[in-house]
Image 1 (spheres, rainbow, N blue to C red):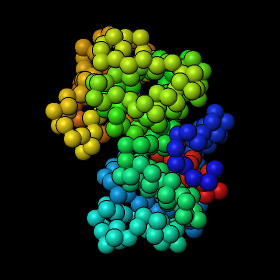
Image 2 (tube, rainbow, N blue to C red):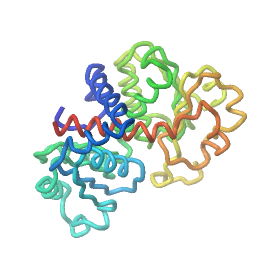
Image 3 (tube, rainbow, N blue to C red):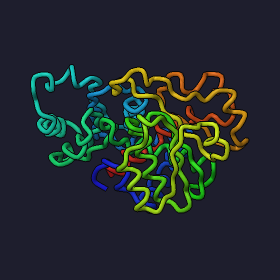
Length: 304
């Protein structure tokens, strides 16, 4: 694997390899000796985080992952304003420049085709850390890892994905990964204006993955094994009156199955009430921890 650009590049075997490496990272981080071994495993290597859009979890988890593997880190957290991009430098020229300093580039950008453009000119691995409203493949890997961790499987699942599905790149990538496994059924919960893109629905049909769409949150979550909620992307909405996401609250908890798993890629606004955080089914902060080890596994794999 040379780059990580899209959820569609993975098959079951590739994901199994990534998750095996992730389990290894998890095990090593649990002991002081294991952490010391990891900390010298990639000495002399450098990772660059090139972020043209805001990020907390993704950027910091990648930087933490690199640091725990012994890599040096160079970073810009607002490349749109504080890089030569503001002088008119093309993305391609920026990538060629950064690749002279780093052995792997982790990039977030507002254009959906940005990661493919970067990979086309980069002599070093490029990781898509979020591309516009297109994809966020590393988030989907940590999401699937969390699902497997909490349910014990990646197939035979009823998964509800709700929120702003028209602009939510995390939901798009997760749906594609879930389509790799048999007997998964997806229910998309949203308003008519914010439904999942037709390209993803077409992909599910090609894969033979069943799905349905509804605006009735309560009926959808009643039989769900996994409830994956997302925020409305205010920064991408022309009509701000749509910012009224369905809310996972105490009433919603009452209709969920006792063993259901509640997930969210974060950040959240009002779509999951803070009172839900103490419910044992809430796993969104476990996702944050899993993001670290999954990204360690990816960096280890790409720079081996």
